[in-house]
Amino acid sequence: MRTEAPPLMPIFRSHHQGHLLALLLTDPAREYTLTELATELAIPKQTAQSEVQRLVEAGILRDRRQGRNRLISANPDHPAIAPLTQLALITFGPRDVIAEEFSTIPGAERVLIFGSWAARYGGQPGPPPADIDVLVIGETTKMAIFDAADRAHRRLGIEVNPERCTPQQWADPDWTLIKEIKTRPYLTVYERHTP
Image (cartoon, rainbow, N blue to C red; front, side):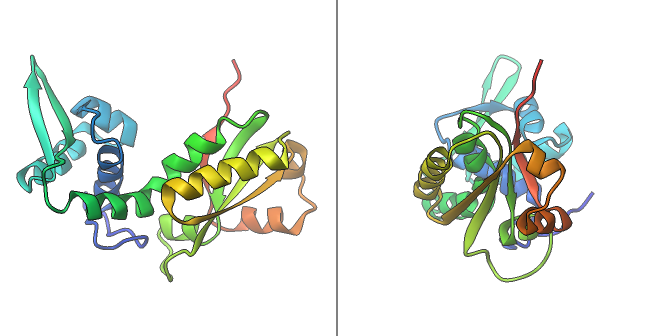
């Protein structure tokens, strides 16, 4: 199945390719099996295999055998790896970086990205996002969400604007911002699972 170029950065041939590059290039020392990549990216193993093969043939990724496993990693010797890593991070990295930085906030039950970044990520055309809007749902402090936003900003190089609300405010909104978020594209990047 052919997917369209992502509006966030249409130079990538597909969302799958962009996510794959973001995952591998932003952690170049880590190796993944094809099964791990398919699981991490929530794509069929065959799709992961074809995307990996293209990028290995181009020299952007490298592979090696360990027993029956094929281990895939970034190729730090490729001359385009630094700018390609930056493009992948700016385009597809926010999903993972926001999840990592905001999921550690005490009391955070759910974290989502909304606004123009979420709209482009969801396929809506438009100008590149100038910032990333984040909503933390839970009993959190302002200080904690602003600290997380600062860490994410340093990693991504793009402004991160955090907001917070309680689970009750999310479930039964009387705040205009939350009502608006619910009518537009948003992406849940973290959700605490209770046993």
